Image 1 (tube, helix red, strand yellow):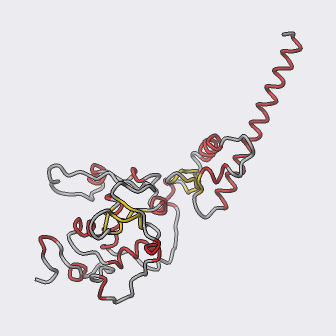
Image 2 (spheres, rainbow, N blue to C red):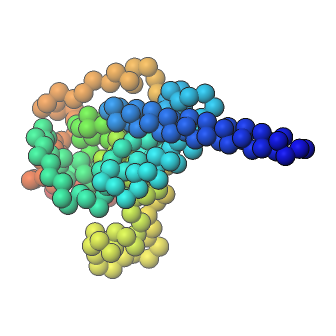
Image 3 (tube, rainbow, N blue to C red):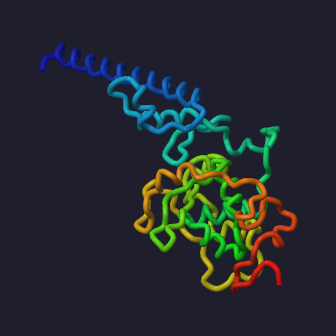
Length: 261
């Protein structure tokens, strides 16, 4: 190839590389605008649909993560979806004054923790772990927060509903995936587990995968419109919405004992 031919080939290659860099920069600008304007995290295919032709969404998001690294706002992936979030190390300087319509009770927090670690899990399994009955009102409260969802129905007598966590749960607690939940050593170090630990005790490996397990059936259409409990309904199995007196309001299911001796 002649000298002129080499120069032409180099010029064409540089032109193509500049065009790719320009398209990538435009893709980053578009992705940034989409994430800033969206109230919810976006999936990669939702972002890819708005990018210029031929621009890789993977490269765009890699550049977004790099560009926002070390800044007050980070580009993060939450349960396979992308969002802009304030940096975790700045949480202590951020003051939020939020009017909470309802503070979760101890029973609700215990139930949420069990669902997070043991999902998919049924109400009966939750009660077995807690050792006391769990009212449907508690589960409905967690569903209302957007942190818990109905997954399916267990293939067992009675076909009980199975519960699991949502992407909103991960987002609220600053987790990228359910595997980021603290393990046994982390819980011990934080002081949540004290005293002598029983031999063989371990933290379960939860799964919040969208796909159902082999022992789960899909929900029926009627399950999606299950009515919320009426306040004061005697069928709810006791009121465990308050922290005070919870032990008296819930039935102790351990060893078949009732709540009133």
